[in-house]
Image (tube, rainbow, N blue to C red; front, side):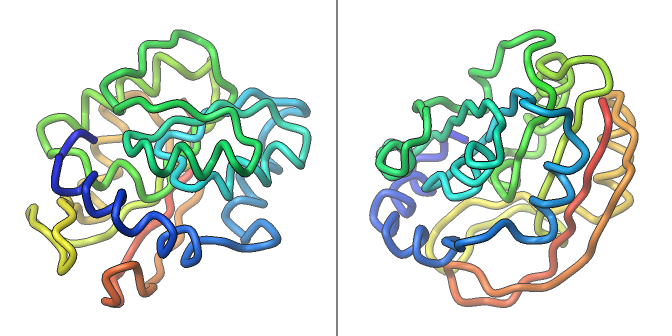
Length: 195
């Protein structure tokens, strides 16, 4: 993600966002992801935000690398003890490096034309059979939320088709609805896929 307006919102609201996503224990999705990984797996938290999930994965014994395009989020993650660095999705150039990639509501900020490219980069970065966690909002089109953040929306079938085209096999999916930083309640999907 390199949309200036989206990054500006995350810069201004970093503390609010950290409070929104902070939790003391892994939720069911993170527990399922970690349970499907080998012991001491190497994981990339792609779009780590304030580093809450990365920290919990580290505490569970995983080797975690974390990236986010917003320097303010990286600073929060580092304060939590996470090895985080500033990087955009397009900077991912690793090959056969990770047992898992955790992309939890981050790639929804990527433009539609770039999304398949990012999925291909994730596939290359994963070891054979590696695991991708993908959290996305469900809908149609592209647009900005009430705070000015850019989103690309997909239907479930379209997401599954894009994952298949990138060489992934979906093994778990969960639909839900939750309130986000902008205060609206939005439908979402959590997809777990093997590369």
